[in-house]
Image (tube, helix red, strand yellow):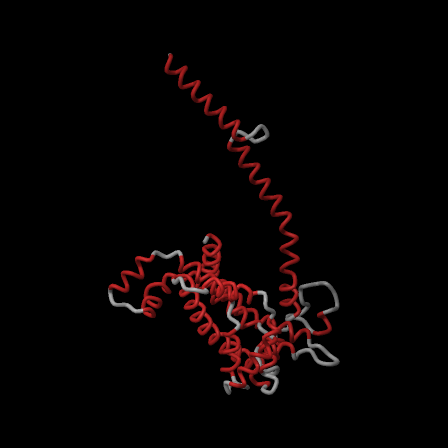
Length: 308
């Protein structure tokens, strides 16, 4: 009887502690806590739903307009076309030279991704694994470059591309795009590599590996999330960039990218909004597909960098 009384008083003590920890206004039973969580999630969803609709509406409007006629595009607020105009896509693909611009954009983007990811990974490896005089100055200059507008670097890049003999060529545009690699990719690689144990490098050196082999065979394969993040960032930058390809293709219209080609749907007296919407939809599809495939690595890479 004494034991039962003791255990009862102990259970009551724990219940009292739980009640105190939950606060005077908190529900005490699991169903009450569950219903309150559902209510909280419902309120948050109702608040975020209008924001989501406003955010995604331009994308829905673009797809809807690409399936209308020019007369119907601005005839009302309806998003559903009276008749699906699939011929708009065929027209812009064949007649507006979008096919050529698409190929140019793929080549430039793929080349710039390879160059920028390899270069940013190597820079990040050196900054993350080695301590040398002026290291923090280099990091500070890289961080400063994040705030430098692209327009300020157009003239030096233009002169450099001409000096290298790469003007009016896809190689020149590719190199220029790779030069605009995201500084944040360097910082992500540096933060990731700095957290890896030094024993990995020491074991590889004992096996006879040099600097490059340690980087390629040991460290870089471990940086898949950060590499995927760098690929997505560079992909979006090169695919959507407008100013640099516009300046470098002024004398060679056949070298235009999609972003520059879409701009030319706007004439002096008439703008082909339907054709522009169809071309923009074609341009955005690869970005959406790439992000869907790499989103897991992208989130892991950014989350890992934030933790570090």
